[in-house]
Amino acid sequence: MGSRILRRGCTGNETFFVPKEPENPSADEDDGFLVTYVHDVGTRESRFVVMDAKSTTLETVAAVKLPARVPCCFHGLFLSDTQLKKL
Image 1 (cartoon, rainbow, N blue to C red):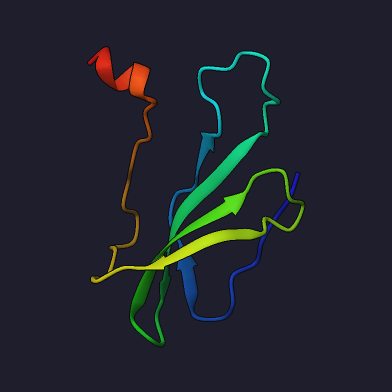
Image 2: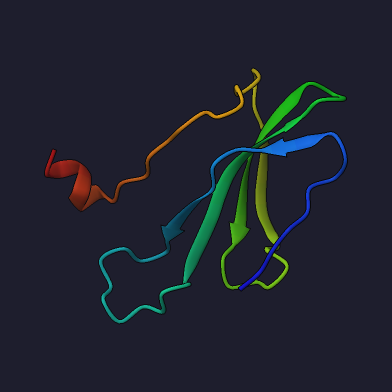
């Protein structure tokens, strides 16, 4: 289990777990990524942040600056290709 404290002035939204191999039943349950949106009140920038779910410090794998602010309490949903095709 890991945790991460955001720097002062930053707020995170709902965090999702995205498995690296969603179709692999023998994959470790924590083999994947945690993804979230983070908004910096001071700079007024929002980023989409991808963290390593196995890392106890939730090491950042990628952080993408977004062209617009993501509102607080923005909700999302991640589906595998298989799940999406069933819709």
